[in-house]
Amino acid sequence: MQYVWQHRLWEAAEMHTVDGRRVRVIDPGRLNTDAGPDFFNAKVEIDGKMWAGNVEIHVRATDWARHGHNTDPAYDSVILHVVERDDAPVHRTTGELIPQMEMRVSAGFNQSYASLVGAKSDLPCSRFIPTVPQLTITEWIERLAFERLHSKVDRLLSLYDTFCGSWEDVCYVAFARNLGFGINNDAFEMLARRTPLRLLHKHSDSLLQVEALLFGQAGMLADDSLADNPYYKSLRREYAFLANKFELRPMNGSMWKAFRIRPQNFPYRRIALLAHYIEGGFGLMTRLLECESEKQLRELFTVHLTGFWASHYTFGGTPSEVERSALSNSSIDILLINTVAPLYYAYGEKTDSFATTDRAVALLESLRPERNSVVATFTAAGLRCPDALTSQALIQLRREYCEPRKCLYCKIGHRLLSIAAREP
View (tube, rainbow, N blue to C red):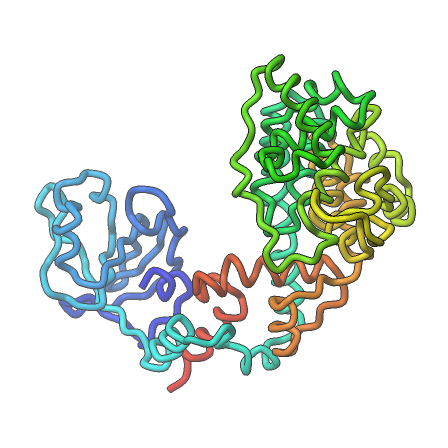
């Protein structure tokens, strides 16, 4: 009902109050998302007389009293009560009668809305998408891309406050989180928060100690069946000493997931990679800002693990031939999309550097689109996805609008429903 009123999608060309007075809506007002009447500052002409004030929307008129509005002075400013069903008169706290109007919605609108939000298919509007004007699609994709980017930036700026303005700490937690590549994101972030940079920097001159701290805090050094493994034994010894010295508490090792993950992406290898960037002092944010091209960024993430992890995917088993690069090209793409671009944008916002925020957007526009089921679903429906900025927009559309069935707030859904509302 609010949506229909806000977008003027009512069925009748001419409307009247329940007592027969003609109603003409000049301005439906501004939707209120907080407490109080549904729409502020509306302008409505009733029987030739102009009224300015607030509008309240209900399905049934009896909802007015059921919600307690008849005793709430905040609703005395209501100039029109809009309902689907007139089953009772409504009054202000003074006892004065409030004009009331039944608003009719077309059957086509109701049917289209029900078919969208009640459909079992992943994308119930897929057949309608090719009919949407390209300008509408372009504007919507751009807005979605920035919605998703800003949600990541807000998270980074919250970390910035948590770490009292230390960009290296922000980068450390963000980088660690995204090494989880979706399935282990939360576990990696917990590991980073439990193993702060200030602690790791005290031992950054020893890769073994950095690895011992990270694997120990990850809860991965509790397997007694590996006690005869020399490397594992060294890690356990180092961690036992450091945990006692700094009163450390490890995570629950069961948080880590390896099911249906390629060996190259096992969390052990990713933790070893994180240790590589901490050895000698973590300065990834500084290095990111110094990069002047996508090629330099890729070189920064092109790493070959050494020592034990040069020939192992897990702690167990015998040495074997493993992939030389710790990160594949597609994994580097994901880090550039989810870590580097948001860091650039957050840093640019905090330092008032438009060049840096523009750099973040340009990076996303230069990267290949992500290849996943979400992007595949939309491209099959006719939406083009030429770059990572667009694939991020499609992921935002799927997660924040399609899955919760917020079709009313989607520009594609809105266009479909607007057409349905005006069909005879």
